Length: 229
Ligand code: ADP
Ligand code: ADP
Image 1: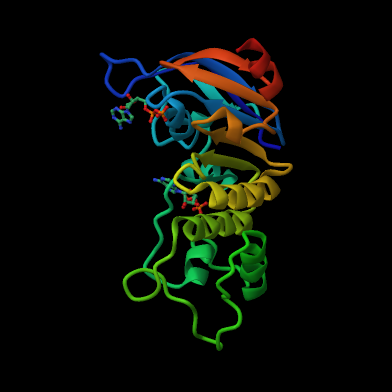
Image 2: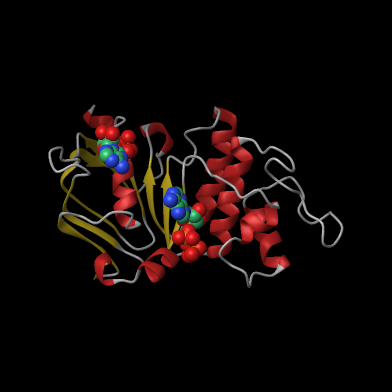
């Protein structure tokens, strides 16, 4: 479920400066496609268009054969889980941050999601009614810990589509590998669009698209791209 098709997508924030110049690719249902390329190439713009922060100027984006402009924002966004580069958390408990948007989630579901995301700060060993606070009023979480909270939120949401927009690029190498391992679990059997700055972080993708100045310069598996270069 959740096949994504970008068909000849053109987009500009400023009409005088085109950002995407006819981008076409497909993420088959359950597969992972990575978009890599230099800074400013338009990679994040692709994820913002899929999430409909903006609309394409020509061409189309569809999910399960339906143009995203014909899907309500609520149902589109409920089908998509987004893990951004820097997760901004609410100044509240870790559990609140995991549960955000899912008020019906049970304590068991929240704990299971925290386990999958490998949140080591226990949200369950604390007394009933008490929980670990984050933000000014509580502990400061590291970048990696914040990403784990974002991953747990996504696990709880269980969306068919996942957008990982430089989800590990702000982290040190060791943390990056740990978070990558958690993301690999979460992205299994989900239609996943990965935005990354380096080819080496997307080795397992079913297809890699190299975006340069708003155009697809190369595409293929990691092995195929290595052969060409
Ligand atoms: P990448 O993710 O590949 O680094 P982006 O998609 O973030 O690239 O940005 C592509 C280009 O669009 C950049 O030149 C950037 O400055 C410009 N851009 C990004 N967001 C906006 C915006 N909200 N308004 C105007 N220009 C933007
Ligand atoms: P839902 O209502 O289905 O929970 P939301 O639109 O509230 O969906 O958010 C879905 C996911 O997208 C959340 O994990 C949230 O962190 C992320 N998200 C929402 N808005 C933004 C944004 N402006 N930038 C980056 N990520 C966002």
